[in-house]
Image (cartoon, rainbow, N blue to C red; front, side, top):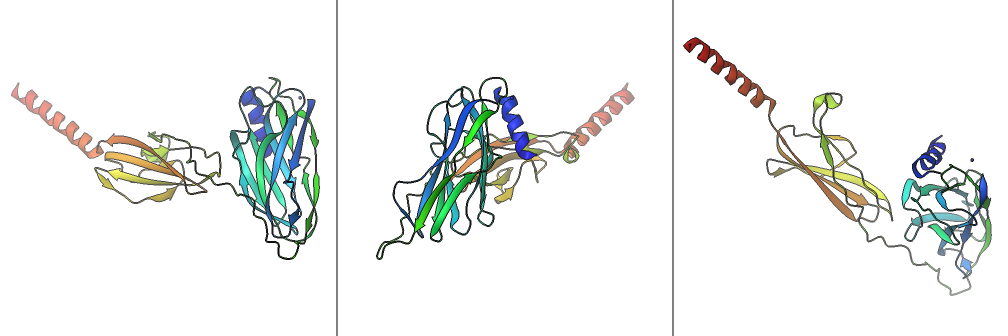
Length: 286
């Protein structure tokens, strides 16, 4: 149901019934793969007709022979990730869904992501796309591409005596999450009318790990705490500065800020009371 929603989302959002041909395939390094090597498997697409603007890729791998170490999205043709790449080393499954805006992608060798595997044992391993994999065309009609799914079988050999395991260069994420601006709001319909803050951003490489937040009330800073959006402010009066820290899985961070001045409700009632007293005094004088 969730995946169907993602497909519908991209259909509606980017103006996307089965036409034209496309292909999902996998590329491995040209070197032999030995037991204990860590190596990348590149998930790529070809579009033979119209442009593609959404991809769902689900794969199966032999969990007795391989295990996923990490993903690398650097250089991917996809820029939107409603379903970040995820995996189970127990079940031997990988799943992801992403898209890109108009004009989409058309051509050969479009990189989706790199999956870094460790070769656990010797044997013949097969990486296979599942039938749930899909592509959507950027043709304004919501068409699903006629998709060819190419499995890949390769051997994991015992390393020659004296050969050390190869570890292909793992991706290093040095880019912080995208800049963002938290929004402070208040409505009688939520949180008993209290002020709250909402925030959202993306990290295109290693992915978001968590958000942290601190409140600075009348110049006094509180401690950082792990939070989710929306978050109800602890301080509901005074000059409040909210700092939200988005941290990716590589430890890079981006801070967004928002400020609000909240008058004490007691001050409001006091002013009303004084106005009433003044009005009574004036009436009596007359």
